[in-house]
Image (cartoon, rainbow, N blue to C red):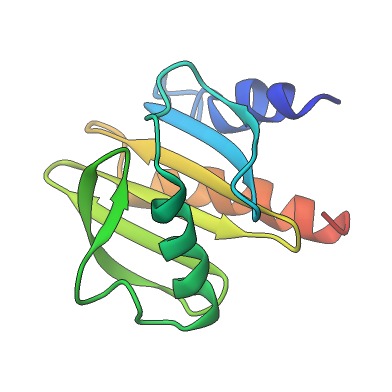
Length: 133
């Protein structure tokens, strides 16, 4: 399966059969290379990905400054240190799951809930971890 298929079929899937979808998604290598992304995924800066990687290695790094992605600032909310980072901005947010080689991103806006975004992103991330990716 291509990386783009993982984004299109697993991250941008119909959530719980409700006709809800993440607003954007991507799989990005830990070196900052884009493996696959939705057309709506924001154009990010390398330093934004570097900050996210640093937070996975040093949990709490982003808390004082916020998580930035595509120039948008998200307030960092409780995640799982070293495994999941969650951010919130207004009625939307972002979930990022770290695998051994990549970062799985999901962005959402209402009516999608943070829990639904977490479920979609973390399910694919856990699968990739199980595959050694």
